Length: 436
Image (cartoon, rainbow, N blue to C red; front, top):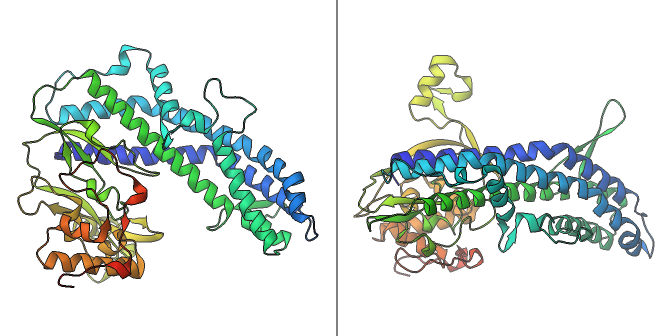
């Protein structure tokens, strides 16, 4: 992937996150109203009694489904609408990816040959957000799907609520305590209550899942649009190959990181992306003979940066711009639940490689950045130490990764299918060190 393609990839990632956040902002009022209604329903549950669980299942649980359905309907409409609106931009970026490698000057935009809106609507509805489950089936939009059948997404929300309430009943919790586990509520000056979405509540879990569906659906549509552009512009010559691209930052998972930089002659040689919820990976077409010496990755730090003895938050105007231009850690990002400062760093290809890999990124990053990629906390720090020991023993960064990641794809082996359930960080007790 050359520098221009990298710019497009970064822009696509930024846009996808922006579109997903716009969906969540759009449905936020319906979401908070649904959580308020569910909280009120749970609050009506008898505080004690032999038939408390039976009453919940028979009387109150059916009301929960009716309370969340307006929100799920609004989410379905907003997600599909955002994807359709984003379709033309996705198509432009897919075309720009081909132009960036000089493949063709007059690249053909396939959707413009037919009705663009109808084409993008079809792609949005058929996008897979869960393996084997399209967006239209998840939300009950499939033709012929029984209208009285509860859509899978609605059922999943009801299941989460039911599990939380049943756990509270079995534990003997008060009705008030169980209601607080659904969502928080803060009194307002006018006597009403404002719903809050605290971590650990049902509301937080449901909202996080909705965000994951929006992100994943948009990314899957990105894939479909790219494939349409490739199909409309047949590739001739054996100098072209497909490359898997993962973001070079510590948020990448152990499934996607080892795939970064791998190339195959056919796109069907790769598993279908996105590989999992919130996956940001993509596949691009490249010239296999083109050498890429440098890519840029993100390093993170929990320490507020200083410049000439002063904290970044204290700097203003030209002095702040000068500090940022110096390569200082700047804006914050969330990694493994922590808000960390970040900065961009050039990553060089090591050895005889034609292009930098994610292993190079890990090897050339700070110890804290390494620890966050390997899971964060003490476990992440221990895995990072183990990774460095393998590199010091003479292993390449990619080989060192394979010592810390179980079942990771190799550089030359088959990767037609990658099951995220089989790829994971090695448990601390199983870490191996050179010479052990």
